[in-house]
Structure formats: structure tokens, C-alpha cells
Length: 492
Image (spheres, rainbow, N blue to C red):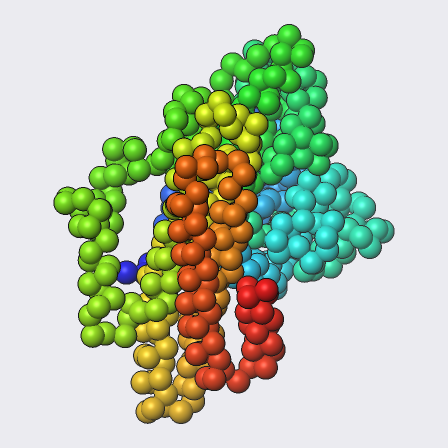
């Protein structure tokens, strides 16, 4: 069953010492369909991080209300803390969780930014994927100079004008930075020294903008009498947390110090910790399904069953065979693509770590990470495709009695087109990745790669057939042109 659309919002407020104020902000954000997952207060940073998840419309409204309450309670002219800040409600990112894309979160961020200015007269800058100015994709650039510096510079420097609002900051609430991004892990490493200059040097070395690790932002601060390397990890699939820790540890050794402890602020995806365990324990051919709890969840949710491989796949095959329109060819294509990615993972995993293929350790590791990501996307598309078909049928039924609902038919049909189109594009990527594995994996497994390539090709063709059958019901010429261009690219 397809889960409803879910978005995560992680507002950062410039208050980490007064619990009553933080409680009031959270109270203002309470709404039906919005769930509080976490709250973190840090007195040294004088900052709190709130994690919300829920229905996109209500989460957006909750964030807007939170900004209003923060503007009411927090006075930046009296605020001090180790963490850089521009606003009382400093940063508000939106992150896609379920049935949403990053582009959907960009639209949410821009609507929220506009409403914050209209409702509270707090100016807004857009950052990350929502940025309208390339230089503002990086939060560091937006916030450079902080509240004190920007409130003067914005009056004369047109490049610092907010995306929403006038060329002036709110006198006490500053400005809010709103954006859309992937899941971010706030990760800090404490050093066994009070020398903040060392932490600053390490922060500079580790962050990507200075030539460090990709998807890492870092700085050095003093916290509780210790030097801390404070970091944001924007893609732990591409740059695992274990690699970041080892990098900091190596840099610290240059200055005769070492990590004392590390901390996570807010939440972290389970997969990031599983990757760290694999990294440090060096488990050969590790897969998340080896974890007892993961296997238990899979069994209890019906993804696996007692009785071997047949018992696990038979329910889906029988669903396809049933005299119902969904699941159908689109779901079958997604499942086929998932199997192709799984075969690629198997072959890469069987070769990685072996002495004969040591020179390919890095590309095999990268391939395994990407294939795992694609596999999850294909599995999600199995249900998503069936659900989108049901939505189209429901829209057609409604339009019979309410002609004005015809617009809903086109919207549902577009969605039902984009899901298999995404499957086709990713299946093409899988096919190319599997082909690239041939020279760096065990030749005895060439037949598995051949099967993987064939499955990926079939998945792409099947998915495109589902795309093209929908196009006759769509009138939007711009949408049609874009889809046809993407279909041609898949077939090239």
C-alpha cells in the first residue's frame, strides 16, 4: 500500500537556553497531521533544532507559525552563541520523505518563504535546491556576516537583498533562510583540546568548499571548554559518516590531538549507521538484510515469507495474475528493474574486498551504494505505479458526474506517466552500471551480469510502454514535449 506524501522540516531557532521559549515555539507549530520527531537544545550554540514530519500542507503551515512565534520571543540584538545565525528562526529546510520529490519541496519552500514575509514581515532568503541565485545554494554564503553584518550591508549591497522582503532585516528577528534539500546529518566531533583554532583548521580542511570531502560543510567552534568540529553531512550515501570521522581523526593527528567523542544533533537515517558499522567492522558482503530487526520487519510486513525464495515472490506474482488492472505492467517493470539492480549488487559485492580486485575497491564501493539506492527506488515504484493507476481511474469516475474535475484526470495521468518514466530512466542507468562492472568483477559471474543487463533493458522498455499509453490523455504540450524528449534519451 502506498504511504501518503510525507515531508520533513527541520527548523533551527536561535534559542537553546530558555526552555519556556522553545516550548512556546513548539506549541505554536502543533497541528493535525504534523508529528514532532525530535527536539535538541544546545546552550553553547544557543540554538535548538526541531524535527517535524507529516502532511506537506500542514507541515508548511506549522513552519510559518513557528517563525512568527520565534520573531515574537527571540531578540537577536541580545543573542549570543557559538553557532552562526541570521534570524530568530534561522534556517527552515524541507526534505522529501515519501511520495515527494526534491522539486516538490522546492515549491513548498518558495510558498513558505513568500508567506513568512507577507504574514510576519520577516525577510526570507532561499537556499540549497530552492535558491533562485546560484551563490545562495550554499548556506554559508547566505549567512556570511551573520545578523550584525548583514543588517548593515543589505542596505547598500543589492546582492544581499532577500528573495522575499525589502532590503532590510527585521530589527530583532533578522531574516529566515528557507530551502529544500536531501536528508542532512548534523554531526560534531569533540577534540581533546580547548584550542578552537585547531578545530577551525580541521573544519576548513574537511569542508568541500575548501577542497575537502564532498557533501560536507564544516567549521570549528568552542563548546563546553573543548574544541569542536561542527559539520553538516548533506549526503551520507555518497560520503559516509565513517569516512568523515576518519578524515577528522587524521587531520587532528597533524596537530597532535585526537577525537574525544562525537555527537549527532537531531536524527540520522538507519542506513547511515549501518554503513558505519560495515566500514569499521569490515564485514565482507554486508547487506542490511543481515540485521535481525531489518529481517524481522521485512518478514512481518510480508516482504519475505517462510518457505524460501518462492514464498517471498509468489504473492506478488499471484497479484499480477489476478483479474484486476493493478498491479500491472508498470509494477512488473519496476520489480524487474529492482532484480536487475540486485544482480549487479550481488556481483559487485562478491568481488569487492577480494585481493584479485583490490584495485577496483573504490569503484565497486561506489557502484554498490548507488545500486542499493536504485533498488529501494524501484521497490517503492512497484506500489506507486499501482496506486497512480487507481488514482487515474478514480479521477475518470469523478469527471463523469463533474465535468469540471477533468483537470484532476490530467493531473493524475501526468503522475501515472512520470512514475514509469522514472523507472525507465533509472533502469537505463542500471544497465550501464552493470556493463561497467564486467572488467572489474569475477568473470565466472558474467552470466549474472548478462541476466541483469537483459532485465534492465526489459524493465526500461516495459516502463516506456506504460508511459506512451498515457500520452493520448494529456493535453499539456510542454509536458508532452518534455516526456517525449526523456523517452528518446532512454532509448538512445
